[in-house]
Length: 274
Image (cartoon, rainbow, N blue to C red; front, side):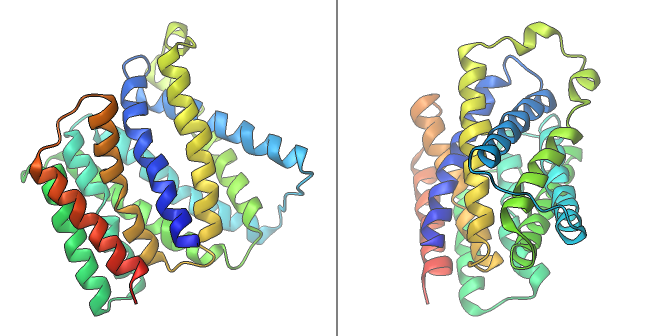
């Protein structure tokens, strides 16, 4: 059940790609991230009030929240800024390298993990077709993959040690606070924050649905090993490609469909097999 729940959340993560891409026609990336996490934070705080959920703020919870937030913030920051200097395909492929980094960090490398990872990376290469040359944006995105891998690893540890809802809420609050300077930094005019249909849909997908997906991830990581979580999340580019093909009219050739099938096969072998 937790693995299936994680697999379903990747549909939402995939949907954030076309939603964000459309919204960024109106607003700069970091300012959009501020709105995204602000909406999510308001949502989870309302949940706490409605269900009278008491938040823990002991030292262990706050330290765990701080560590996980550092990785989460660096991941989003490096990925977003890196996109200014590299292609979207390179960004998607390099971000998905957390599939390799997670088992390497944890030193959990067995035959099934190696096989599934190799199949997943082959599928990602066919699906995304990144350039082979490296630039500053690629290096930043590679750092983003390491940061997201660190976040997944931290969640495996801390969700077993501290109050999980509190860990989730404090991360959301911290991310909002960290992105508060974004409009000033990007010199955003007030018109960029106009509640257009595109922006509202983007915030609905990333601020509401993705926040729910994040909550599911934190719950599931109490039960699912981190290396399997990374493999499950490797299907995110598949859903992003399919949804962009359907809603944005982006092309997906036979090579892309084969790559998608390989990633799905890798998820079945690595996360559901054995």
